[in-house]
Image 1 (cartoon, rainbow, N blue to C red):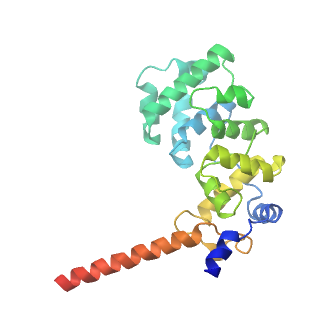
Image 2 (image 1 turned 30 degrees about the horizontal axis):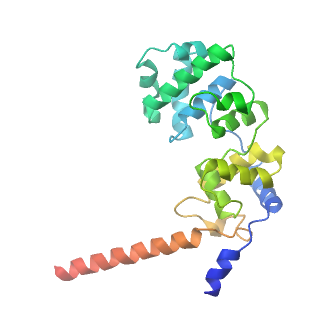
Image 3 (image 1 turned 90 degrees about the vertical axis):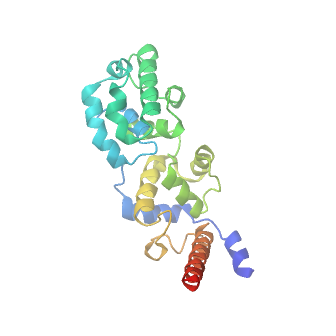
Length: 243
């Protein structure tokens, strides 16, 4: 009981120290999507939903070759854009978002990507996460921390937020992470989440934050995995006995 209570009241990882340690490992952490213009990053980020950045980077060169600019995207024939982006998944919905976004760029912004959260967020298929990716990585003016799956998971494990909703988690992170680190911390946490603090098997023994991190949810996840293994063993033993 005492151990369970201790876990519940474990303090959040101190932000300044955690950032310093992450900076030592990921000082050069940057956007993993390839782009050469604001529009290219906007398109790539929309395509990255439920898809790896590696796959998106394989697809976008052909997208930009076939549809170079907002006007070409907006006027893309039915099926043409879908065929190019098919391997990114949910290609019909993504094509609809890309065409809608491009049309609004042409009608309201002269074909250019707007530079404010309000205008970006008003584009079809663009939420706060996508808007912050563009604002932070193109112009260095993010309106908040980009919260993707990795960032949300690590922020909860570190005790920086309890929220599973990305927008609410972003608000919590915006309050504790210095504004000039908003863009970088997202990239650093994403890299750390991919390399060390993975979803299923976090490598706490290798983690530079191990002595700071309250490991929220990690013990519960391990307990659940142990229970599943025990059940699986019982089923196998029962099966052998029947034979």
